[in-house]
Image 1 (tube, helix red, strand yellow):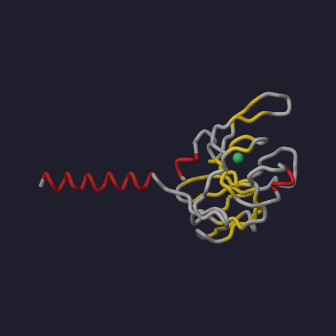
Image 2: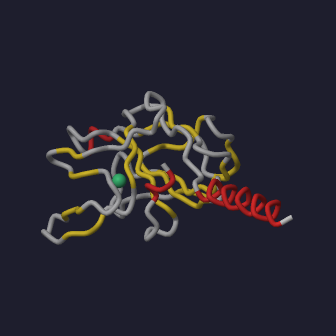
Image 3: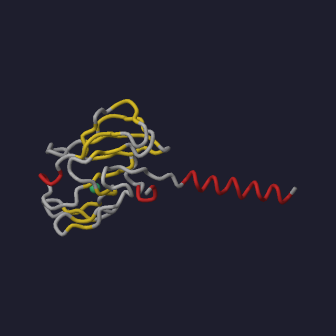
Length: 161
Ligand code: ZN
């Protein structure tokens, strides 16, 4: 009896761990393993918490994780998702100022630099969400990418990759 309880506890605990380790499915055509963006000489690094500099010299933290994706590539839903409206990275508009807020996999997150086919409704995992915008026009030489940011920007999305 004690052994049965112990075994049940072990099984339930491992299920719990699995539930916490929800992982993003492939986000972009040409990058099935969700390869992360490293560092560019001119534009900094793609990791969460990377340092960024404003034109006035002040610094801030990169609050997302960048996943490699070529300009014009197809962006896929990483879970069965519900689209929750437009989300944009910049106050001043430019060619890549588009994106969407989503929920799926028990997470709420934003994807930037894509033009989604729609901003509301649902999309199944692996189906097309939209297309990556022309990032090279705005940041010449950068490793083009999708920016993944949790709705709570204090949460590091890297744990879900
Ligand atoms: Zn980013």
